[in-house]
Image: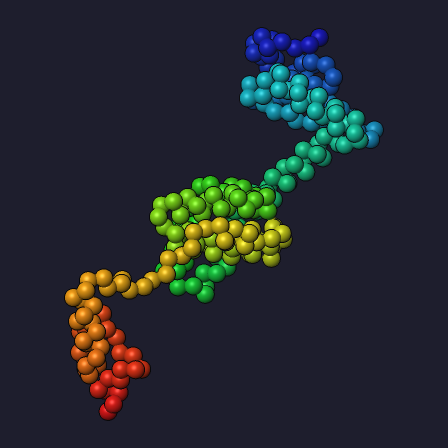
Amino acid sequence: MALTDTFIKNTKHSGKAAGDKHSDGGGLYLHVKAAGKYWRLAYRFEVKQKTLALGVYPAITLAQARRGRDDARALLAQGVDPSQNKQRLKEDKAVAALNTVEAMSRAYLANKRPGWSTTHYDREARSLEKDLYPFLGQRVIGEVEPPELLKACERVQDRDAVESAHRLLTTASGVWQYAIARGCATRDIAQDIKKALKPRQKGHFPAITDPGTAARQRRLWRRPRSADSALHCPHTVPTPRQPTDHALG
């Protein structure tokens, strides 16, 4: 006889040490023990009688337990042991947790730390924690696509921090190369998007646009001056064509 939600909710442990089993059909049953109520699936695989745990009531409802039973039966029809499949999925999840972007980034930083200054290490770590982990940290690193990494870098760029965006991308490239060496990624996706960011701003002196300042500038260039006087002139520097007194000896 199939179970009902009302029966499952109200049934109590009888006091038997082994507990009480209430069948729902198709191998699914509710195992009621002093510690709680547990969903179990009894099945045979390669002549052996086995049991698959499907969860604890009420976290797993009757409907969910039945879906678990049906999924397990589908695996059996394909010649797959549901218990072994569950173990493989658990192991794959554990491996994936070690291969996330955050886990791989932290391993990369730890590997680089002996050769970096404290200032450089702290800057790289803060950049990743602020701008990469919140968006891609829990993703498996080998599954992240270039547009996803680009979006993370563009968030930094949109703060008018173009240089910081480029530094983040450079650090990410190191992380992905480290992941490749560890067999957790197949390519450095940072290389695919490095041309997509805005170019770095190159430093330069401001142009002199005032006519009076420009005239004074030309007069200063024409007359000899010492190295000390050149240092006090805000827009002039010694050049090979204008040797300083010190250079002339």
